[in-house]
Image (cartoon, rainbow, N blue to C red; front, top):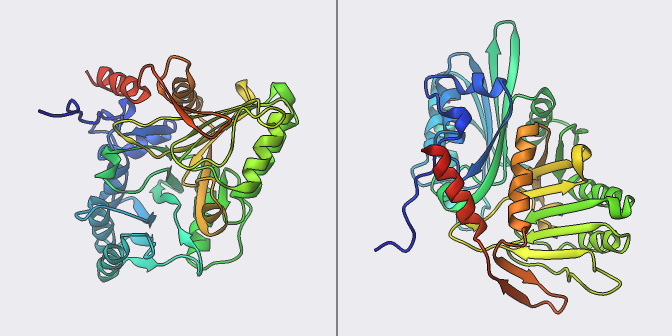
Length: 369
């Protein structure tokens, strides 16, 4: 007897027409996939596989931090290179527990004709980004994926993650410049829709936090992360609370911030959600209403991530994607949702209520029927 009912991740509603080119669908508007409630194989994997098979695609560039032992992503990249496309893969050979596997993948990719690079000296490349350059008439159009999780079909069924598929020109320019930097060209550029560590994520988050602190009670800060331990960010959140700004945090693991301390963090609440799937996405909200900024990406709020890794956060601009993120955050923070609340004494208290993951599962199942 199974502990949990079986669940097959459904295809995102926008991607159900399997006969239509995924690039055509993305041109119609951004697609925000939420794994495992949306299938990885019919979204991100399909994106790379169609790029490899499409004769109009000229180039594919991608980071690989972890992937599966029989990776369809690597197979697609090999096929693309053998078909004569330019394929650039940034492989992180220092990914913990995956060092030997990644070295093996790097050799496989190189033998197929891919240009394999190993990132910047002294920095782990943890960003989850992919770029496809496609010739469309007289135009070269860039399609991007920026995510919170690995290009790993197996963990995509077990980990909760977001990924943004977009043809937005600003994101395409930013991701192109980031790949240029990772492959050895030039200094860190000025990005439009990305925050990139180690130069830009810490300063960008601090600026956004301070902006909301300046709005006092009209400000709002929400973060969903795996860990929150960076001293500068924690101090900035304390300052925002003292200024009257509401701060809502969903933290799966380590959290050095103490909420609810009189005179320090009375406007901060911290919740943790543990369930069937490993909470893995990193999502940030700054502001309320139409002016709110939403960001998602690979970076946790830890010194190692902000200072010693290449990480990427993308600003989400599509209204439908923003609504999807807002609904998720509202669900996780709702009074009737279960989980754990962190007290001022540093002790987690279980709260009874509906499991947010089960609500999302139910919604995904209903959408697919």
